[in-house]
Image (cartoon, rainbow, N blue to C red; front, side, top):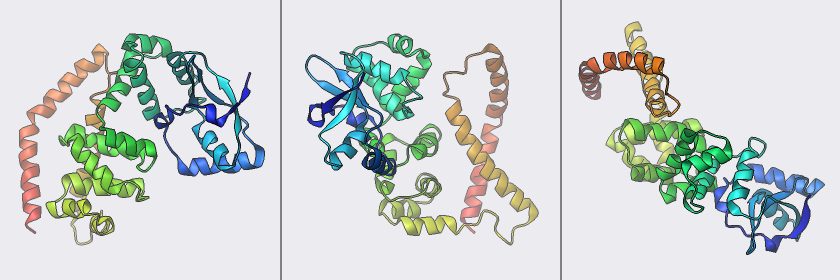
Length: 299
């Protein structure tokens, strides 16, 4: 059963554990203005305080509309059990992977639960828990703040930037510097991908331009390189397409190699044969790619 509670009674300690979404919050505000709060907020009522866990958009919207109380449901009297209850309610609560990761780390560190305890409580595997713990562990505090503030797309971080760390030995500090340069600029996922390619794999001049905030100029330079330039022979166009496809495949494979779900003996038997073939050709492949890179840079 829900009850009405004063906005001022809600402890907002966990507000930073939930991703901001300004567009989604604007829709929530409009809905509350028209129909009121239809779904109660959720939290835990400990002996010392009332901690809000879910409903931060509704709370902020209520405050903007001058409401003093909101419908509320308690998930228990302990923070850890409340977090578990909230996470078990997903996907109904639609917790994003970073939100899941943040709560997992909270359970492991602040509340002293083991990986096995968290996995059992959430009816998940230990690898599911470890993957989310590692996701937070590899981020700097600055990156976390930017992502949870909603000024940089989580999709771009997960599927464009993280693979650079796996493949190109990009450090967390370099990743942080890039994100700080492009965060809050309302760039599309595609534009961020182009800028990341230029920043981490392009020439020094392009990297310097991005670091100086010349994002539009940098994007123009990247976009002015046609995917299928006129004047190329059929053989040249084929190789360009293969190089593009290879780059994407390398990123995907680099990320998937760390998947803890890879566990079966048949998989490892075949993977061992395939990787042996790849490694035996690696030196020759790197030599040819380096030659092409050097030659193309002189044209």
